Length: 267
Image 1 (cartoon, one colour):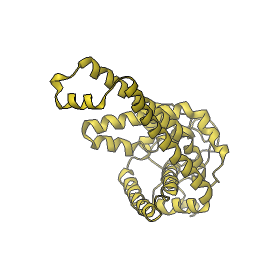
Image 2 (spheres, one colour; image 1 turned 180 degrees about the vertical axis):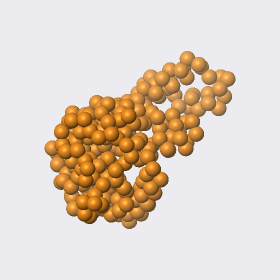
Image 3 (cartoon, rainbow, N blue to C red; image 1 turned 90 degrees about the vertical axis):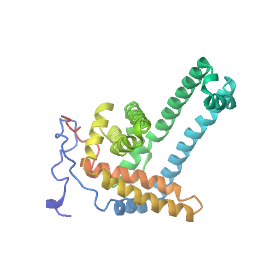
Image 4 (cartoon, helix red, strand yellow; image 1 turned 135 degrees about the vertical axis):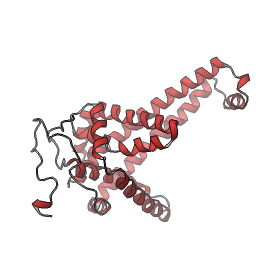
């Protein structure tokens, strides 16, 4: 690709001076699958370790909290059979009991969301480093550590908005989820606050949502088929591949091909 075709040619250099206005995305998603596969192939061992750790963290955080919630619910006297009877016959329900149960379920959801977000937040800077042409290293984790509060807050807001959208009519939740997929990368790569991270992530995928959905759907089918053929082992590189897709999409659409660039100016 020559300079005339390079969508990143006019980027500001590294530094924390005021950045360019965050207008339309500067890149494109053409050939995203091919580039993600090439990055994965170049760093197969490191990215598989990332995938294994990420998948393990997700499983432990989600199932661990779920089983703990079941155990704690039993200790607090929440009987599933009683709840099922009351659902079938609401007139016989104990309002105070149901209120306590709903509060307990809300608390376990919050804890589960926080634990899973914390577990996965560390993998954003690693995959972002690989998307920029570097090898996956533990040094990249320092970015997540410094920005961890913002990453957690931003991703929790995404989950909350997605959940509310799904409860409203399913489709709005899916639109919100796909529109904010790059939030974690924005949060770990900039100095923006949580609200501005969501704003910028939404803007980056503007005009690219259907394209990115199609790419991700195709990748999901390929990875699902590969996982079946490998007795489930394909899930490990599959997790790394999906993270790489997001990281490359972020780099391309934002034009932030190196760390430390000035933050975008959001109008």
